[in-house]
Each structure stands twice: as structure tokens, then as C-alpha cells.
Length: 176
Image (cartoon, rainbow, N blue to C red; front, side):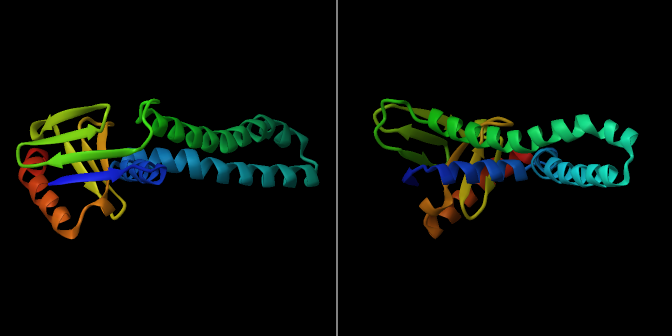
């Protein structure tokens, strides 16, 4: 099966989200950093306002460092994530490339991924550690945190079935 596709920033973001969903530890870290800290910041600000209204200075003094530090984290972490995702996406493509087309050739023996005019890489199925797929993106893991990605929309229903069968023969066997 051979595919040619254009990778977009939305595809890369979908890959990052799917990657986070693959392990419980990654999910917990994401929730703690990007959901719990903003909620905790809002709660502590409300508590601080209550302390100001009620005149409890000692309790308010204990919260001042948290009231100052947590908003920086609540705002700074999503901003950093936003820029890091874009930076990583840009690094996927050499600066000399004018388009973002890529191709991948998958068969029973190997995966051949190529960037036209730049290079290609060959990966045997023994080098694929895991597989993840949803409606937006397909990931073939070559290490714990590195993966080949391709948009699932680039696959026809027959190609998707064929890919799932190939993965079932080669990757699922190793994972068991």
C-alpha cells in the first residue's frame, strides 16, 4: 500500500493528543498541568478574596506566593505548549522544502517513509513497537516517544483494513 499525503499542523496536534491518550501517566500529567492548575488558581483567588473580605491577614499572607506563582503557570504552560507544538511541527520539514507532501509505502516486510526531494527511511516491522489509530491520525511507534504519523483520512477504507491486518500480524504479536 502506497500513500501520498500532506501533513498539516492539525494532523500534528491530533497526533500529540492521541499520543497523550496512550498512557495513563501522560493523561494524568496533561490533566494536572493544563486543567488542574488553572482550576486551582481560580479556587485560590476566590479563597484569597474571602480572606480579604473577612480580614484574616495571616491566612492571606500564606496564600500570596501561590496566588502569584500559580497564575504564571496557568497561563505560561499552555503558551509554552502552543509554541512547542508549532516548533516541533516546523522541524519535521527542512527549511529548503516548498511543500509538505510526504509518502509512505507499507507492506508485509517494511515501511518506507519518504519526503520527496529530501530523503527516505526504511523501517522493518521488528522496529515498530506499537500502533495507535483514531479517526484523525495513525501512529506507528518506533520508540516510547517517537512515531511515524499519517492522517487516517489519507487511507481509503480498504487501505485502513489492510493496514490493520498488517499491524495485527506484526505489532500486536510483539505487544502480547
